[in-house]
Image (cartoon, rainbow, N blue to C red; front, side):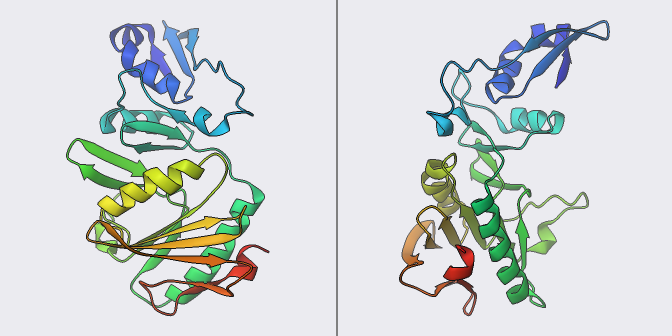
Length: 241
């Protein structure tokens, strides 16, 4: 991201937040690059990889408007949950293999039906509270309200189902923060796929509460099955092959 020196002086706090989110800020003067503002990583990321992906501004909150400005000016991918910006790292082979198996099964099952499965990167914007607008990119989602896609192709609705595939860098975010977000914002079913443990957890969410949890293990069950869409099931063997 490039900003003028005048803009930097007038909005230093905002650009400091962007730098904390691992966005490199190039400062220009008279059209020339003169300085750089970037995050200081004083820890070994190989030791504490997950926390290195979580960037919380000094005042404790990144606004929705600031987040939009960051994402529009950056080539990186970010999420915003409860005022905290998360930089999305590149996925591993196991992560991508699981998503490939899921989307193949979901695509075939939903073909010809009114609902549509989509994969990341695809933003969904969820209003947890009036002053707490969150933006996330689930690994896979199912939307049934395609009328909520605007003329620019931006989705403004609420998915029926979301899927997150765990990785070491996103584990606590997906297990805790996203579960809380999806529960409170009206998503009806949340799948958590764990390639490390070869497990699938499916949360049934009703009226902003967890109504049921189903656990599936590659050593015990042949299929992980949706409670929301009867007949939708994924082979555990293929998912973790």
